[in-house]
Amino acid sequence: MNNGLFGNRNLFWLIVLATATAMASALYLQYVVGLVVCPLCLTQRVFFVAAGTIAFVAALHNPGHIGRRIYAFLGLLMTAGGIGFAGRHIWLQYLPPEEVPACGPSLEYMLETLPFAETFKVLLMGDGNCAETLWTLLGLSIPELAMAVFMFIASAFLALLMRK
Image (spheres, rainbow, N blue to C red):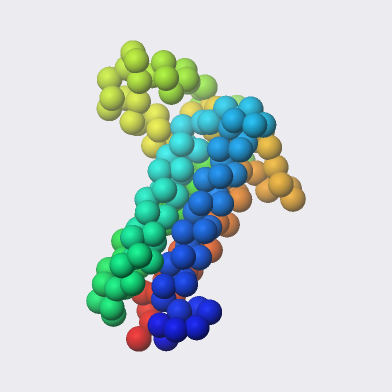
């Protein structure tokens, strides 16, 4: 099933389009709307870019059966990471206010003053800044929307992986 609208190459291009749209939306919210990027948002962006890059290379390469499965598996790993971080982000947003971790300094400040390991830990775990819901679309917060996009992308990678 390598031809047609839902052929392998087109599915990889669809994933590229989804990740590019997610990143364009994130950059719009950051630079046009003026939202501050929290550590978990930044981490999710890394997984979007990684999944999109894998799909882009796969679409250009147009691999055979084994190559398609390798690209799909790697892409699925990246989306699984994104789903995990989006899930943590959503969990933080639904915590009662008294259980929210303390807000940390900006990423720039942490990179300048803290050891990389400590900055990396904050990026992975999030902080109080991540618990704020600053913007919604159709009642969904940014990490909830990111989760939906990651699930869509994971479904496409899974379809590519499972094809005969």
